[in-house]
Length: 277
Image (cartoon, rainbow, N blue to C red; front, side, top):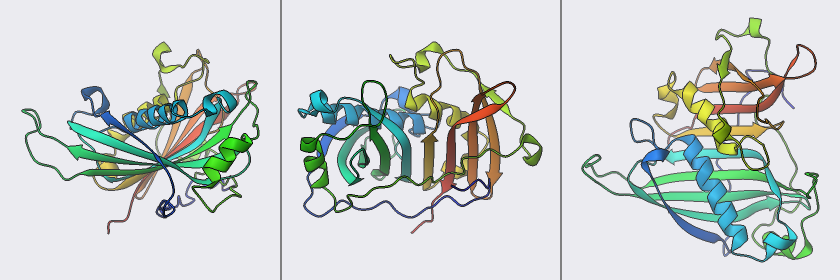
């Protein structure tokens, strides 16, 4: 894994769906709680759409009994054409690659924008392509084999059946003396945690939205956000953000207390401009 804070995050396009592959589809609405002051749908709202469609997908199958527990190791969000309020969102979800214990689940989000008195201008349709690395775990949280029935269903969607983990973000935080920006504390609320006392996946990206206020040009056009979850964050744990602005990319390491006075990385996030076609 790369440890250099200036190592490049890939901007290669996500793979298309295999021709003829089945997929799950569901519809959602963009709400005012999903958008910023400019009516742009925030990254944390996109993460919530992905959680919703994943839950709805497994509830629409019989695999909620055989394969009920999954954790996300990474999420890639490619905002090709930004979403804004008001809009109807369609999510299409399928398997892009897998192995016996984990899978890359692709979700294509499209938005049919509408108008109202607060946003009366016509806008082009929105497009966000995403990919999440999901690990199947048992009730103890340990990686577990996907059931034969679910593996057969997922493997029919893709020809890549030997998926391996490879980090996309630099996983080692630079020393504070090596970066220009000072560390920043991010205060968590009890509402940021799920029933398992883990920080909700979307709440990590709320911290990134706080950072993007100072880097609006990164999300003004097509952009990619990559978040990799390395360690769980539980209630009462303070988070420190270490930031590096590197040309057309923002890198953030979410630090939590380790042993003694040491800090360890709980998550890494990159937000990069995507090349325009």
